[in-house]
Amino acid sequence: MIYNSLGRADVALRVSLLVNVFLIIAFMIGVNFGIIGMAWSYLIASLLLFFPIYNTVLKQLDIQWFEVFRYLKGILFATAAMAIALVVLNIFCNTTLLFSLLLKIGLGSSVYFLMIVLLEKKLVLNLKQKVLNLM
Image (tube, rainbow, N blue to C red):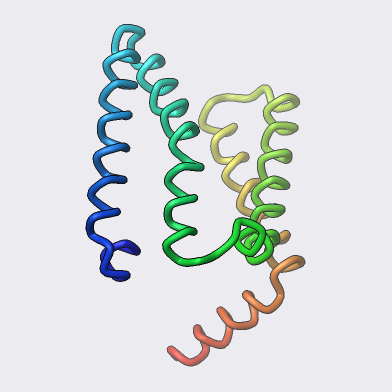
């Protein structure tokens, strides 16, 4: 979408070809190891493709990485706090699968929401104002 809106369909085509060829190769390797192998191959391919793809996007938008992280730092910290809370819960939680899932959803969403409220007050106030305007 970004490439097309900038009139750079040529870049969109090259990026799409790179991603698709890379994923096909990864899946051809992963399929030999079953569903877990497919999941790992997709994860590894996604990690390897992340920086080349986003570097291309940022270059087209004339934005630096530090600007992206500056704007997203609250969201990144909230995500990290949620992940840490879920890992800790996973270590100490020894319950049934369903209860564990419900507990993790509750804890994860609560920690994330709390961190967003604490770290991104401006975002929360803007969202609140937009909701109030809809009513």
